Amino acid sequence: MKLIKTKAIFLAAGLIALPLSGCSQNAAENSNNDTTLTGNPKENPAAFTFKKDPVTVNAFKLDTFISISAYEDIDESYLYDTLALCDRYEEMFSMHKEGGALYNLNEGTTDKVPSELGRVMETALKWSQSSDGAFQISVGRVTELWDFTSGSHVIPSDNEIKSALKTVDDTKISLSPSDSEEGAAYTVSMPEGTKIDLGAVAKGYIADKLKEDLISRGITSAVINLGGNVLCVGDKNGDPFNIGIRKPFAGDTDMITVLKLKDCSAVSSGISERYFEENGRIYHHIINPRTGYPYENELWQSTVITKDSLTGDILSTLCYALGTDKALELAKNTPDTEVILVKDDLSLVTSDGANDLMK
Ligand code: ADP
Ligand code: MG
Image (cartoon, rainbow, N blue to C red; front, side, top):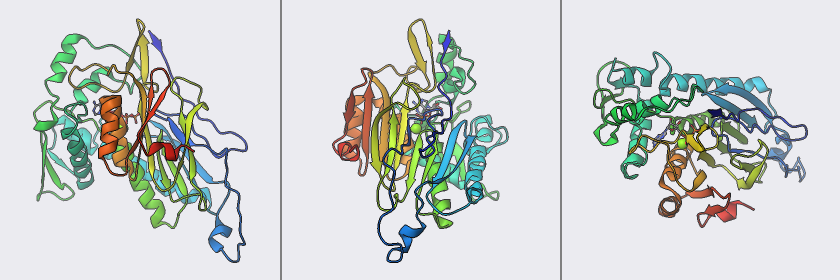
C-alpha cells in the first residue's frame, strides 16, 4: 500500500506567508503581485497604516495547518486570541475530541447540543436535503471505518461498510429548540448508532467566526487560511488578495490558477490531500453515502467561492460529490456562488462568473 502525504509548511523569503499545506489546502494566499502603497498618507490615513507585509501567525490546529495574516500594524500576539478560538470550536465540532459536544451526541450520552452546533447542523442538513443523498452529515460511521484522520489506511470490508451504511440517513435527523439545561439549545433526534461527521462543514463556520473576531478587534485587512479553507477579510488597501489554487497532485507551490478576491471565501475540496493508493485505485476521503466507498468521478478538485465560508465549505464538498454538470447547475442556481472544477486531465471547468475572478 502506498501512503501519500502532502503536508508541509512553506514560508518563502520575499513572499507573504504561503502556507501551502494541510488537509485540503488547495487555496492559499499568493503574493506575486504584492500591493504597493500609493497616495499621500496625509490625505489617506488608512493607506498610511496599511502594511505591505502582513503579520502572520501559523499553527497546526483542526488537524491541519492554519494561518492568519493581517495587514495591520500590530504585534503578532494580537492574533493569538483569535487563533485560540479554533481550539474552542474543535472541541465542539470534532467527532474525535472525547467529551466534546459532537462527540457526546455521537456517543449517545446526551441528545442536547449547544446553539452554535445546532445551527451549523441545521445549515448542513438544509444542503443535504437538496443534494439527493450525495452529501450527508450522518456518514460518520462510514468515515470512521475509512479513518482518513489517523493515517493508518485500511480498506474496510464490504460487510463493515454495509452495516455502517444502515446508520446513514440525514432525513432521519431532526433538531428542536431545547428549553432544558443551561447551554443546551437544541435537542437532536437521530436513529441509534448514527454518527454525525462535520468534517465537510466545521472549518468553514470556524473561519467565519475568526473573521467576526478579527473585525470586532479592529482588523479590516486579513486572510484566514484553515487548511485550504480561505476567507478574506476586506481587501489589500483597495486591491484584491491573490489566492492561489493548488494544482492537484503537484508540488506545494504549483498553482493551477490564481483568484483575485475581496472580502469573500474560497474553499477547495478534492481527492489529492487525504488519500492512499492501492492496486492502482485512489481511495480518498469524500465518501459516497449511497455506497460507502469514495466517489469515483471525473473530478480531482472543486473550489467554491462564496461570501461566507460555512456555505463555501459545504458546497466545495457537495460540488465535488455532484460531479461537473450538477456542480455547475448548483452554482448557476445559487446566488453569489462560483465554482472552479479541476478534472482528472487537469482541465478547468468554471461557472460563468468565475472567469472574472481569475485575472
Ligand atoms: P477537508 O476536510 O479537507 O476540508 P472537505 O471539506 O471536502 O475536506 O470535507 C471532507 C470531509 O467531509 C471528510 O473527511 C469527511 O469527514 C466528511 N465527508 C466525507 N464524505 C462526505 C459526504 N458525502 N457528505 C458529507 N460529509 C462527508
Ligand atoms: Mg467542505
